[in-house]
Image (cartoon, rainbow over all chains, first blue to last red; front, side, top):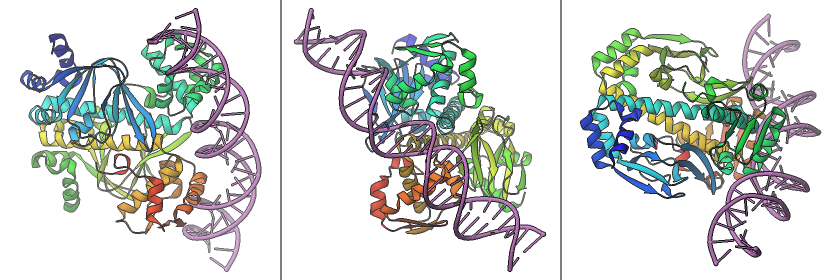
Length: 232
Length: 232
DNA sequence: CCAATTGATTGACATTTATCAACCGGGTGA
DNA sequence: TCACCCGGTTGATAAATGTCAATCAATTGG
């Protein structure tokens, strides 16, 4: 593994405070691999042999049931995924596929569990990360259960805008069909939902979103810290 | 706190392995209180001052937004709730109310965080609990996004049946209006959904459910380990 | 015992969302 | 260059779900 990557991973919240020796030991067993786009990295139901760390690219976490499929989340660098399965030594609940060419570090789950037992700082970091993940899903659950699809889209746009630094024009960061799935609707409906936001000053050209009237959209979307704040 | 309760709490996965001294220290700062039914214990957005341990009774975790409300989960003895908020020292994402007369131990969050730093076993237990909670929400998310309301109800009935030990006749364990909210539908729709399951041999009399044809219902519901298994 | 309350159910209807089919338009590759 | 492919959009329609009002049934409290 190149030094720069080693350092990048080391700087992750999850690893930044643990003992050097322990980190080195984790990395010794790990290997980094490049994957092309659209590769299925893991399938739900499989045993969780590796903790994955996305170094570059992006990964879609999705689930299937009875022939249906739904995007649950998108992983962006640099962060880990399927931590909970690794910790519990339980089967993955979600599948993962690369959205683009991606570089991923694979750390054997049993190493993670072993170091977890040996390194208090690492344990603390894992707890923080898990609590964070848990709260994210709860927020997403609230989004789904308390809002209509139009409201979800409006709030999604506001979050995306905030991530971009707040400009009135910004780009969607992934395919609309995936966005639809993430928001829990069909692509057709997403199209119509964008139209439904026109009265609130939203215009769409391909992947480029313009928020014409911030106040209008916010009044409609009614974003809430307890749902839409990424931190908190 | 009575000895029997002390022991009951001590036996929780979360506390069972930690050092005696640490547990005693946690309990010293804790206090136990009885609440009548329908009392709001915590409100979303509040700072998380206490880790709650439900000793007896039952508690509804719910969320609100823009005048709407949705039940997120039901807590049953003996278990803790709002662990993630306590750990992160972040505001509650959900509100909690007693469903019936309940007895609850309140442990100051800062004590939990302090002992967490001092006791490796406790830290491990917290990780296990958080990972469990996380996976539960993911399952619930999959249930919501991948299934229709009829399918959710069918699978809920099968899970409830399993919890009761698998009899063909069993009781719902809470109000239908709450069940509706948990399943993400209106009470009216739940009524109709029960009718919709009649062709699969489900009959309802008040709170008493009869599953006339197990195979039929299972064929329709298509329960999945990765959504419906409480453990796993 | 009865009035009042509460939760559940039903019917009629509106709204939302999904489905299916067609079409558009910008790449891509032969 | 041009046919094709793919993602996105549109329209027509169907299905699912929510809303509102009325009613029913069980329960409670006077």
